[in-house]
Each structure stands twice: as C-alpha cells, then as structure tokens.
Length: 486
Image 1: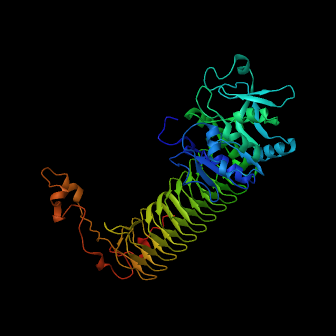
Image 2 (image 1 turned 90 degrees about the vertical axis):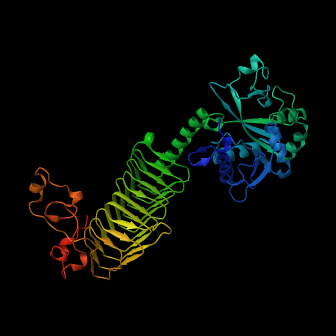
C-alpha cells in the first residue's frame, strides 16, 4: 500500500477494510467472531463489541494466522475463515458457504471462482471426482507449474472447516515453499492425505474474490462497494439522480422518497428522513436531516436539521447546530453549537455561534453573535419572534426577550427586554455640500477632519442614547429601522 496506515485500516466507503468481513460474519449469524491481528494491534480500538482478538506473533502467512487463533476454535462446530483484505464478501455468501459445507459432509469447503484472468491467485486443482485435490500458490515463480497456471478456477481465501479437522491439521503446516510461509491451503493437502473430503463452493459474484494489495485495487473495490450501497438504497425507494457523482457511505440511513442530487456526499452516521432532498453539491457528515427537509450546496457536520427545514445554498452547519422544524439557514450562513427554534429564519450572510434562537425569530442579513472574549465562549439567547435588523452584532453573554426588535447596524451589549427595540449605534449626521468642498484643490481628506469640521468626514456623531422615544436617531418610527431579511 506504500502507506503509514496498516492495510486493513484503509477505508472503504466509511468502514475500515478489515471490518467489512467482520460485519458480514456477524450479520450471517456467527456465534463467535475472532480477529487475528498483528503485534501492533491496529484493529483493537475499532472492533465491535463481542468480537475477540488474538495476535499473530510474526507475519508467517495465512496458516500462521489461523494457528494463532487455534484456542478459539470449537471442534464441534463449523469454522469459517475470512481474509481481512478480501472485504466484499457478503453475509449471504457466508451463509451459503456454511450451508454447502454442512450439506456436503466435507472436512473442508473452500469458496472458489472462475476468472478470465486468474493471475496472482492460488489455483484449485480438482481430482477426477470433482473434489479439491490441492491448491497451488502462484505468488512467486516456481510455486506452480505451467499446466497449473492455465487453471482458471481460483481460491478466494474463504473457507469453511469442520473444527476438529482444522485443529488436527494446523500443527502440521510447514513452510516448505518459495516464501517460507505457512499457507492455509496446505490444510487441504493434509486433510486429503487423511482420506477426508474437500469440496469447492463456486461463486459467480466477482466481488467475493477481489483482494486489496495496493491503492489501485483499493479504488476498484471501493467503486464496487459504492455501487452496491447505492443499488441497495435505490431498490428501497431512494432516487439517486446521478450515481456516478453521488457518494454514500456504508452506515448512512436513507428514508423512502429521499432524493439525492448530483455531487452529494453522505458520510459517517448520517441519516436522511423520508422525502428530503439533498444536493446538488452537498456534503453531510455524521448529521441528521429530517423528513421533507431541503439541503442545497452546503456542508453539514455533526448537525441536526429538523423536518421541513431548509439549508443553503452555501451554508455551513458545524457540530452542535440544531435547526427546528421549518427553520431556515440561508445563503452563506454559518451556525455552530446553537439551537434554532421552529420556524426561525437566518436568511443570509450571518454567523450564529453558541446561541439559542427562539421559535419564529427572524434575524437580518449580517447578524453576528460575538461569542468569544479572548478567554472563554459565552452564550447568546434570542427569544421567540424576535426581529433582528441587518448588521446586528450580539455581544455575548446577552439576552434578547420575546417579540423584541433590534435596529439595523446595532451592536447589542446589554439585554433587550421583551417587546423592546434595542438600538446600539452612532447617530447619523449629514454634512451638506461635503462632496463639492472635498473636490476643491487643497481640501483636506477625511482622515484629517473633513470640511465643515466633520471629524473623519462621514463618521462621528452623538451616542444612540439620544434616540427619540419610539424611533431611531434620525427620528423615524421604530418599524423603519428593522430589516427582516426575508
């Protein structure tokens, strides 16, 4: 793999390669699953509950791996051996193998496949009765004869053994081969020498035999796994507009009548409720999208989107962002660690962090919660039905009561009582004739105190505390200072 990451930890559609056969075995009803790991134990932290782990002391081949697990083998029940780098075996394939093994009454049954190009695989040599005589490895020159290399039936590395027969054979494996390893297929030779019957269970699904030894094979296996995942969802009632540009990882849950537009990527533990539409060009990671919600051209991670809520385009919902039913996070809106109430709207160009926004609130464009003072995060509370003016900054910790308003361009540093209008901005002054005087030769620029003594040219003015009752500093009625930002 040419990687610092152990091969079995390379991911395939959101699941480490080595866990694919583990999950398949559990779903097939295995009474016990034991994973053979290397001394570094890379799989130890990711195994599901109830799955055992043993360590193979040295990398001495597949036979050595099964020897390491010998104490976990029950002689009274069938034992299925799977390879951690042959990830696409299904639960159905495992169940079919066990059934064929038990019906055939053999000591061993191996899964085989007929390939047009069997290069690199061990060849299955049959006797005149059709039973397996031996498996010839082909990893290095000299392992197999020219006639054996012409055989197209290959060993997939998947076996079912009678427990007692496997335990008898394992101690007698030898490393008399080109690589000096203990090959598990030698068990076939040993059982045949005892007069035991070994059968082959041929499968038609090419995915069962695909092993991964490099990044190219990893990409090929990933593409097959992804197609299978999408097919499963489509057969369950999900519309995938363009499967070629849609990525859905293995643990994602999708409800009926979900529609995935092109460029959609659903990852991790994401779930999407019935009738929701996701995409185009949307990535959702470890998040929940409710029924009939709409998410367009956005990135969600660790977020919850309620039923019938809308997100995007170009929204960013970070961990802890929760939108209530029918809520809206619009264009270029970022939300983090905040609860947005049912029907509340944050339409565009806003950042809401560490906040609680009440039901049916409407925050205008450019709304910011200033949640960090340089040492700690603080929370903002915005009540139900609040109407926030455009370019309002809420400096946390601060609380805005139900039905309150904020004036456009305000910096709110103190609590706003319910039903009140919060105004926190400088008073506007108009300097008549400023442009004409500024253009005269020798006129001083705004930074030096512009014409007419207006400091800064267009700034300055009295504090907003002089706002007339019921209006803004310009004398307009309160309703005129608010932009709902619909």
